Image 1 (cartoon, helix red, strand yellow):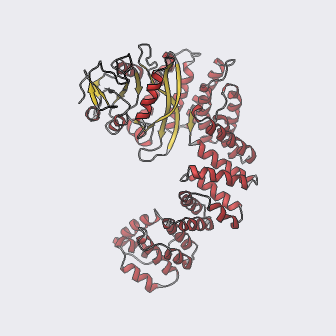
Image 2 (cartoon, helix red, strand yellow):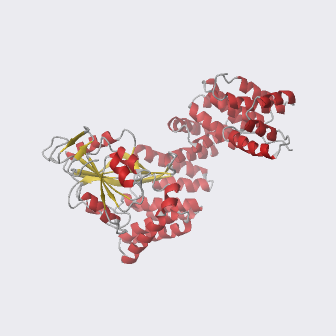
Image 3 (cartoon, helix red, strand yellow):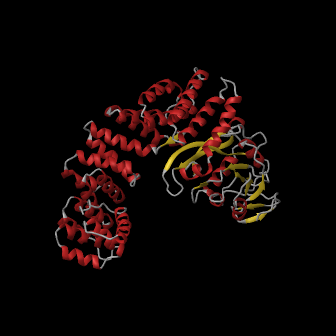
Length: 554
């Protein structure tokens, strides 16, 4: 446990007195204080605190009434924890922690987010550089919201100020979705760092009831502000975002329309600013989810004069709208424009949703195929697949491209694609019932020494009732490969399709009970009640890893 009259220098691993200096400057205070507020965050707060080792000289946590083990977990991870009564005011809670911070710089984290592994020292080195430039007051980074606690898939990411100089005037405002920007005095650096956030995942939101709580606080603020108060634009956006997280898209769209109308009323003659792209992105995303392409075009036109260049928001969502309307030429152009912005100036994007780069690549490839530019589509796909070899959208685009070019060109195309992408392409083409593409992609992966792709191809051959081909494919898998139990079961299916009942029965005699029952059920043989239960388990396990042919009629 770290006492409150000490700070812990994680950059050197040594405890020092408050007067010690971490970087040897005239200012004898430590360099970085990390400040957090938390309630019932035992699941994530330890990981959050551990992620700033190498960055923080001290970590302060205000516990606002946890009923779980949050305080103990935080202290065990190295934080200084104190109790703070909750008053329905996030800004007040944040500021109470800032008052205790002793570092020259403050980094603010939520208890359910963390820096990527290995990044803490990089962030500290950057802060040390910025510390020597008196014109720099703060830095922004991306808060990257994950779709699931267990998976790395990104829901969206947005820029947020998370580090600033420890000055008395630098304090948060607004009780909900609190902001530090209005009180900052100095230049803000846009960094490429990011923190991974799980607070908006389905698991966490559903468990904590965050959206209902947030809407209640936002509605209170809306009731307390004048109709033309500029802050209402932000409040409408956040209120709509809470509706969107609940799947209430029509309600979200209404809030976004109010936000845009008020924004345009208040900002008619002002120069472009990044916030305009945020306003458009929030609205365009929910319009797209609702299938309202007309609204995307309408608000793109109204907000275009206010969105700075370069920015990917307008071309990306216009590309989606054109694609949905099957307007292939404009769709390709817009997606390529979005990619130029995303790749040419990635740190200028204020808000990114869906995994825009991947969808822009995939949309452009399919639109180029549709307008007869298969060569350009191929070049674009190869470039994207090298960077994102396991993304389903790109695998789907590859299936579309393969179907549009002669089979004689497949070997040349597949030979330029990463093996991981070939496996993803095999899975995509199977879902689309493009069996020849699946076989060709799996075969190329096998030729590169990845026999793990071959069971897919054998399953496809069985789906096509081509047991001879399936057996040839299975024979190519090494005897010591870990997929051999699966190979044995697929071989039994091939023997049954060939009418070799004796070979099928011999295979079942050597099989585990659940899989033996599954294969009997697949073959249409009668089962008793206990065997039916086993068969369900076995079939589910098999179908989770390989495509299966339709079962025979009993």
